[in-house]
Image (cartoon, rainbow over all chains, first blue to last red; front, top):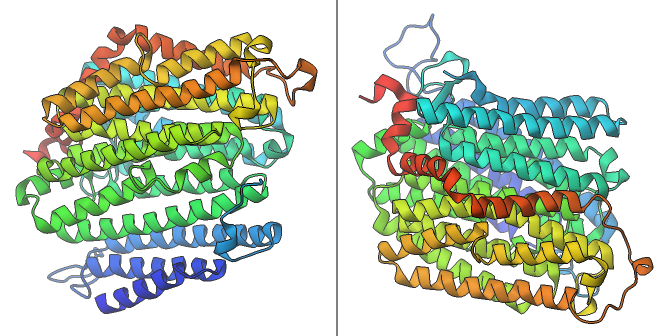
Length: 108
Length: 495
């Protein structure tokens, strides 16, 4: 699990460091998945039953990381959507999706 | 239990939601947003009175006891900041009425503004570190939209950089939270503080602490501020004013909260590191402010210097330094909004932001000129204006903690700030008047009122230091003694 998280982080960071805007956004998305997996791993995997009143067991799984994860997924989803729309608009207005050309010039 | 605490979050978000429904009715938007900020200000005033008599107030949401549910905590520190936030937001709204333009007003400027305020207030009030993340995101998503609202080329370009840097820092924030949860098994600030006090702040905990510092530094513009000058000069005046006044301050608040309440056991490492970063920030910011000849660039670099100075006070980790940091934090929120509004007005009048292309404005606009002069003096900390007392205490704090270099750098950069802002003043307001009233690109109609209010506030805060001193003292006492906060949240569980 933690190796998978590492791989996702590596891919995400690699994509963020490329020049094309769309790849950067995909990179943030993959990085987000890596983070989500990390949260769920940090809560401990597969220990105990579901924390419900009716079910009897010696130990229960920690449900808090899952709640955190759910919130993080929603936020990640929303920012990615916003980011995609914005980059499309930027592509339309500025006519480029190359970050080299997004630096801006002095004549503005 | 005190249900008032939730109001600074509920009021703006409800007002904003109602406004989204009535999209065409701009007048309703204006009235609602003003009323909402005023109401939040009033609530914070009432709460300040309660905290003074009854101590730190806490609210456990949904009736879940402290470590299990999400708690909202109102201590004096948070309430002072919420109060200042509502004042600054009020003035920025007044300014926006005359400057933001119909197009942006129709595209949900006021609801977004209120959502931003919701996020800021939520960050100040929350007692749970994951909730802090959520409030950060609420604030940031609103700011993403505000910064790109209008969709000009430069705005889009800068907003992409701004969003990318903030998305990455949010992920780092989540990583830090995940590790912290794995080690302590809790997310409640008070509970975290109590648990870390028992297990100690060793190697792994230090790593997480530094990770938090990196995250908050990205948001506050401490050392990692390279995104800031570009993105703060892209949007319209009033939006960059509210960003400069509030967004970086939320990052500073988070640093202060986390490093006084949770990770305070190893100040010779963490706080020294903060001090180092703040020294570099001040130097680089001051160099930037002196180097540019563009009003917007000078103003944004001054934001950076302000961040460095506040955190120098925090780094000293003495009661005096903390008092200074709090005074300066309040002053900085007011003065940064003020200086951005003033600079924006100058650009609005002349149509350019190069100071070499503007001169002699004081003949046409004497009141604007004098207010700019007062703001400039206050910014650089000349007594009796509000910047002085904070700077004095911060310097005293750093000296008493033995960080003489830090205090020295703070004083030298103050001089550089004075130089940079006086450069704007002499170039823009003195000299031949090469512009007539008819040639100007806009008028100051309605714009001077909010500026006047903020100028009055900076003078009042400077002269009336004594009257808010007891509130600041109470806030500092709470920051220096984490047990007050812990007991207010956890109650009997902490014993």
